[in-house]
View (cartoon, one colour):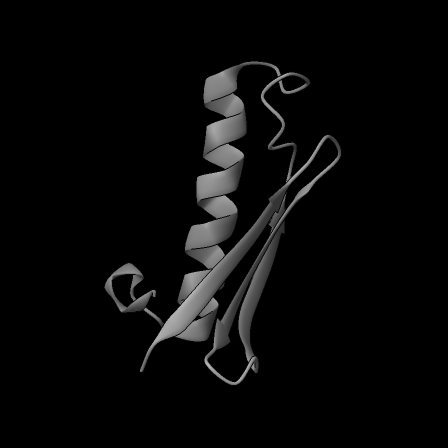
Length: 68
């Protein structure tokens, strides 16, 4: 199965959504600031983005290698 990961890393929160090719949501997650300019550090922002992506993929039961 091919899956898609959408990320919105913003000033107040980060949202990750995993869908299948038909657009059905398989998993979603939310975390803190992903905006490198307003997070405590760029590394902290990256950690929020990666954390949300990892949790959404886990919820969806999808491995990163299955992403299109």
